[in-house]
Each structure stands twice: as structure tokens, then as C-alpha cells.
Amino acid sequence: MSPVIDACIDTNVQPHFRHNAEIRRYLPAAHRLRSIPDVEQQWYQAPGGDYRQDLYGEHYPGSDPETVSRHLFDDTGVDYAILNPLTRGNIADYLLNSSICAAVNDWLLDQWLDPDHTNRYSDRFRGTIRVNPEDPKGAVAEIERLAGHPRLVQVGVPMQSREPYGKPMFEPIWEAAAAHGLPVAVHINGGNGVDYPPTFAGHAHTYPGYAAFMPLNYFVHLATLIVEGVFGRHLGLTFVFADGGYDILTPLMWRLDTFWLSMRDQTPWVDRYPSEYLPAHVRFCSSAFDGPVDAGQMQRWMDFSDKADLVMYGSSYPHWSTSPPDVTVTGLDELQRSKVLWRNASELYGLTVESSVP
Image: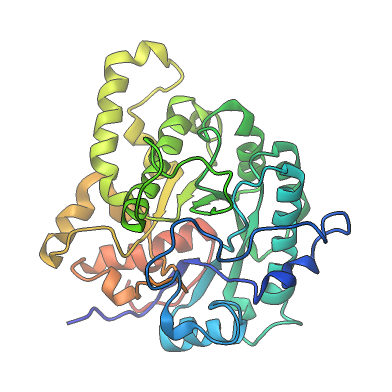
């Protein structure tokens, strides 16, 4: 029997352009005629397509606000949806990349978040400020340009990076995000040909290899954010790892804790077990791939590393792996369900929802 869903915040929704030409209207003149990767240009595409088959139509799935609103708010019962649009990953021309990020932000505001331009549900969408981490100065300027907008609730960067996000060159971006109380969402975002391999050891041969191992890159970012002292210096900074992978969080944190304990003289600025930074600084979006298959093991599994306090429901709409909320929380107790479905997101993003669960 599926659990009753009485409140829900979807923290991982990817809206798309209807076609590649749409983004050009929001690019500056200097970049409007430049070649940019297409929406669906991926080296590793799911065998049946990246998106749910029933969502294909005249344009890309997830490109029509009215349709997305109907699926999320009417059919699924979501109260709020956090929109995290993808950009084009790491483009060799960093100035073009920064312009694309700014264009995506302007498009999101114009087409999805502006109540005068969009649909009757625009007040239930919240957005992400996409920035280019390879252009720290430009990224900070983009945060400063848009941080005051009441419906932009986080900063977005790609999972792929030339360096781990704990390195000093990125810290101005995290400092700016923390200063405005904006979490930083990390999501897989690439396919243009200049990204590093999706696994630590090189390129995977198949899509299953890519899908299984790509989210593990979050741990490299997470470990360096802790070990380099970023979380210690920015107490209000929160990272949201939006592509799952939290099923292997516990053994990886155990390993990091063990190495820190043995060699903590080399990182005196890390003043506690690395795992103790998680509650204040780290959240994960749920994934259809994560967790035990047996629902009877779910409660105990969520207790490891206090994952019920760290995980937020994310549908990954409109991708083929979209996961409905009742399936995501099957096997959890009532308190765990409410934390995953809405409490954790409500606290992080400052969203108020009505629930019958006390």
C-alpha cells in the first residue's frame, strides 16, 4: 500500500528550452550567432531517450510551463517545485559559457517565474541562479545581479568540474552564495565534449556505467569542501547534491572520518569529524536509483548518517528516471516521510506548506 502524500516539495525539476533557438533571444549580441551545444547533446544517452516517453510532443519535454504545472501540481500533488535548468556544461570559451548561464537565468525569470508572463501556477515555482564556476568573477557578478529576486532560491553549478569545488579558486562563489543565504545545487550537466571523464578512472563504455558512477563525483567535491575548510569558514553555506548518490554516503563518510582521525594534524582547521559537518552544510535530492530494494530495510538504512535529515524529495522530472513521491518514501516511517517530502526542503528554502502531519 502506497503511503498517503499530504504535502510535498519537489526539489529537482529541470525545465528545458523548446528548441535551441529559444536561448539565443536571451544571449548578448556578441554571442547570439555563436555555435552552442544542443539541449540533448549527450555522450551517454539512456537507451530509450533521456526523457519520459509520454512527455514527448512538439517540443522538448519539460518546456511548457502549463504542462509541467499540470503534471506536478495537479496530477502529483506537489506544493512547490524548485526549477534547476541545465545549461551546457563546461564550454571551452568561458565567456560564452557565462553568457549562456545568464541567458538561462533570464529565460527562467521571463518564461517561468514572472507572474505576468506565465501560468496560474507561477507562484509555486522557485528557480536557480545558474553560474559558470570556471569564471569565478563572472559567477559572483551573476549572483549579485539576481540574488535579490524573491523566487530565486539557490545557485546552480555542474557536477563536472576541472577541479574539486573545495579548491580556493571557487571560494568567492561560495562566499557570495552564503552571504545571500543561497544554497549551492550541484547537478550533472554536460555532454559538449570538453568535460573530464565521468568516472575517476576514465570514460565508461556504456550508459549504465556512466549512470552508476557519475554521481560519485559528488563525494570528491564534498570531501574537499570539508578537508579544505570551506564549510568551517562559511557557516551559512549549504551544498545540495541533486543527482542522488546518497546511498553510498555512509561508507564514504566512515572512510573520511577514519583518515581524518589518523592524520588530523595535517588539517588543523577541520575541528570535528568530517561527518559532523553534514547536518549544517549538506543536503541530497532523492534519486530513483538510491536505497534498498526491500522496503522493510528503508527505515534502518535512512538512520545511517541520519539521512532522513539530509534527503529531500526530487522527481528529476521530466527525465526517464522520474520518481513519484509515494514510491520514493515507501518503507519510511511517518516522521521520515515528512522530512524527505517537505520538512527538509521547507527549512532550507523557506517555503511554507500546509500538512496534516504535526
